[in-house]
Image (cartoon, rainbow, N blue to C red; front, side):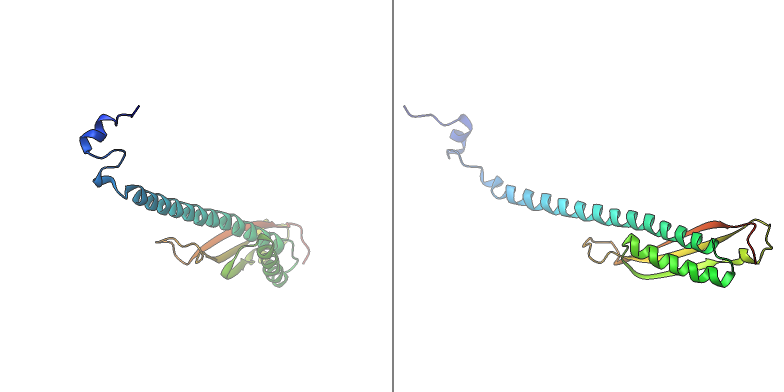
Amino acid sequence: MMRRAPWWALRQGTEGRRRDGERGSASIEAVIGVTAFVLLGSLVIAGGRVAIANQAIESVAAEAARSASIARTQGEADAQAAAGAKASLANQDVRCTRSNVTVDTSGFAVPPGTPAQVAATVSCDVDLSDVALPGVPGAITITKTMSSPIDTYREH
């Protein structure tokens, strides 16, 4: 017994074939879908990298400020802040193309017994050149400032 073709195939004149206007549409849909998926994935990766770098740079600035605040002198505070920031950057595994640590140690000029604080500012140019996304710069600068109290009853 021979099966009869559905009514729409009979109207077309071809059994089981697509209409000529629909030929290749699956390929175009696949290309558009894959391109959108890749762009979305790249956007998620870039956003995640920036968010993680923000948190890491804030942690580095906090470590630099804490390292400076436990120093006894202003000169020692600068050196300890730079060393603490460098070690923390290495531990955080942040890829900075350029980094800068600035420490405000003016709180050490305050006489002992008076509350004071030290502030550290860390800037990092985070490398985004490996994220191929239109409109995303090759690097983004993240700057964070944190402060830490100096021991009120420190010795000179």
